[in-house]
Amino acid sequence: MHTGVTGSNGVGTNSDPKNKGTGLNLFDDQAAISGDFRPILLASDGRSGRSNPFRGLSHWNLDTSFGKTTAITERMHVTFSADFFNLFNHVIYCDPGATNGNNVGCGGSLSLASGLQNFGVISSQFIPANRTSGSRWIQLSLRFEF
Image (cartoon, rainbow, N blue to C red; front, side, top):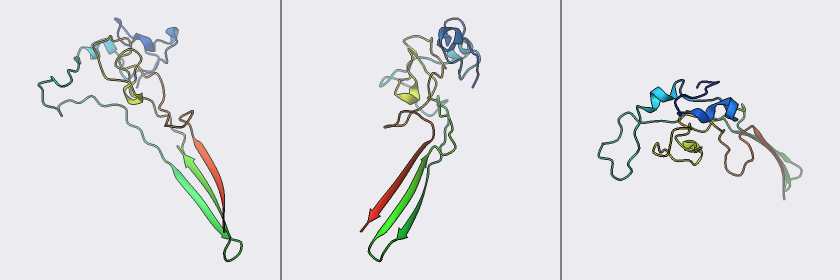
């Protein structure tokens, strides 16, 4: 991943920090790399798959949970638990964009036919469902059983 990338020849220019871009790009010279790709022809592509696939960024995460059950009486128990999501607080970037602001790993589509302003641009981080951010998330719970 490269920082401070401004794009060139109309390719990857949306990463330019002067234009409110992030400056993050998968490629150092987008214009040279974009020539190696062609538009994807879904359902009519005559080539067999599995040769030179275009893959996204790798990412990993660690979630864990700790719990303790304490007996109050023979029939009553209290259970305390702590759940940690993204324990080490790693940033998980969305896959680089192909066109028009779409990031492939965040619900966008991989299509090079619409323009190349966002080719290789990393414009956001992945946010899991039902969450407001991708940062560490801690959940505490107390359960009374009888």
